[in-house]
Image (cartoon, rainbow, N blue to C red; front, side, top):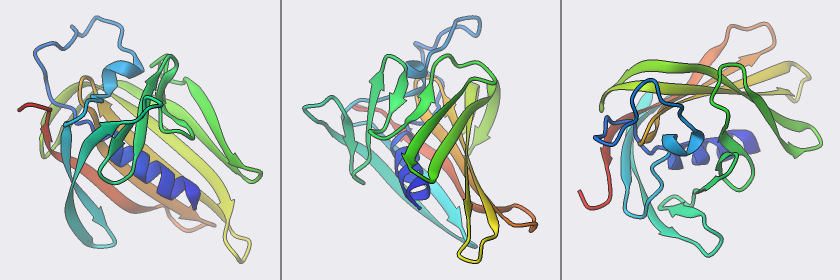
Length: 196
């Protein structure tokens, strides 16, 4: 499942935490996708990843910026800021305008289309690293089928904070008529900007 792996890696790299910073814009300011990423060599985020009853902590560090302008992390993830938003080389993970209801798609193949939407703005979100204001939530969904033909729906929810990036991610899956199950939950433990 390209969507699961690609979105997960992209989300991990976007883990540019959501801490309150002294240069934050006032709540009345207009935020853009660029404001929700902290792409700089040396920035590091530590996350707690919970899946299938187990959990582990993982640190993502931006190691370099390549010749094409992508910031590359220690897990091989790549992100860059473009005029329209934050791009991972295959899709926009966050796209302007940051308005509830704004939608975009990413076509990964003939039967693989990812549908993205700004689900919420102005959120106050608490994760182990702290409480963050003016957060934005993106919801992405991809429909599919199991080998036996049952319909599936994979839903990813990313929550970003200004001047930090991704602070929380939830992956959910629904198969046929079964109840939706949470497959993975990622939350920010610590953000260490370059030079700190």
